[in-house]
Image 1: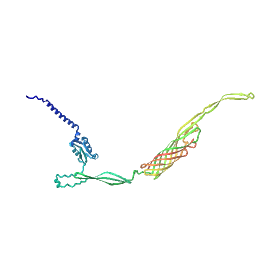
Image 2 (image 1 turned 45 degrees about the horizontal axis):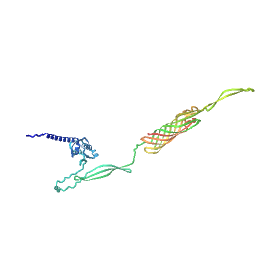
Image 3 (image 1 turned 180 degrees about the vertical axis):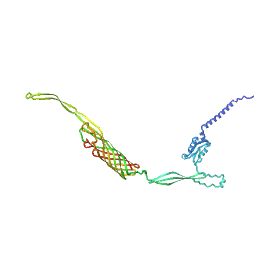
Image 4 (image 1 turned 30 degrees about the vertical axis):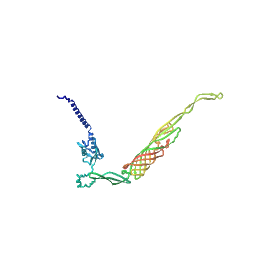
Length: 449
């Protein structure tokens, strides 16, 4: 009799085992897919795929770190000067990739723990170790071989300035590396300096061009003046007031002459205009008195003599006081054409700058005279005519100036001078006297032929 055995629990147990194994493999698969960098970082020497375009060596190593988080120590300043060709590989170890990138350069790497240190290659002399004690007995140890590598290069340039001499030094660095077998036992660094050349130091200098400052010249100029007036009223009428106030004065001129080393003389032609404000205040009084008037007239006949006497009946009327004010304003102006002579002397002179004293005289011819003056009758003012103004005036001036060289034949010349006109501006029959003085501020250019 065959026993009745139920196999369903066994089937269920097998299915459960298969599902558990599959679940583990799937979890491991997703873990590897989503954490490749972690797996690479934890692998001792992983296989990687890497590619880079033509670039500097430091950029390639930075890309290698960015993709696989490899700890690589290097000097960016040194490796940024090294260019590599395009590189690509598949499934190579990290050390092989580093060897390929550093191939053809003077750099190698050394692995310290989990870090790769990029450094310059050193000259290494390898000595074969004895295979056995017997060979070591037969062949005594080779004397330590000393290999010297000299590297001389310029580090910096130093300028040593003392007094009027500049000494330029170049610093040379000599590196001597002593190696025994494959171990560096001592590194010697010898620094030597040497004077390459000396330069005489003459201080701060400006290379000015060769200026021309003598010979025939022409000098246009513009002058702005501060005017002072001496005024006197000849009429001096009661209840009247006259005032004079300066306004503007300017001049345009052209000078020409000849200059030697320090002296110059020449002629001057110019136009000068001066304006001042004329103010008049006049008071007129009327009234303030009584006027008599006859209201009636009668007469009386004397009974004895028969004479007739006339009698008038009078009355008076008061006339009140009336005041009238006359106020008048005008701008008076005189224009002159000036012909003069001048002379200058350079009392302080340099290559590109000089200062000079200047003096001269001129005859001013009247061109126009406009404005108003006072009269005794209403409206108490009248226009000025050219006939009332002196036709010629003599003036003299003296002052100081400077000249700045700006180009080969051109100087900029600011000047300040005092100018005085001799005599009155208007004739003797004019209602008031007027004299003029000026402080001239002039800016000009001098061109040498």
